[in-house]
Image 1 (cartoon, rainbow, N blue to C red):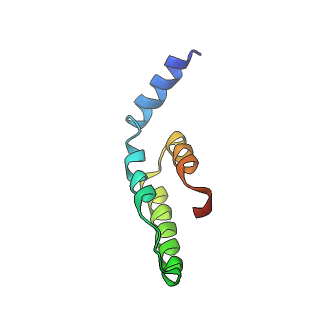
Image 2 (image 1 turned 30 degrees about the horizontal axis):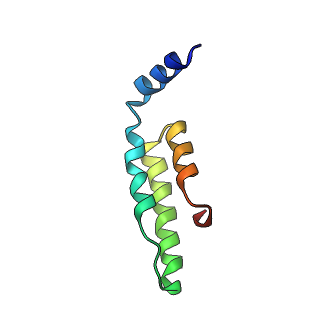
Length: 75
């Protein structure tokens, strides 16, 4: 299989990676400066991501791109 054919199949099947548009705002939400609010922030992010993955069911490529973009200290 050539690379163009594989990419074409992925984009046709997944609808041009629209699932990634719901993950990008997660990277833009700032961490709280106050350490007391960090637990609330982490809980919000975890619940948002769980809800996102259950509702939208993103493609594997979008999930990999997102996990590669998340800073390691947030995981």
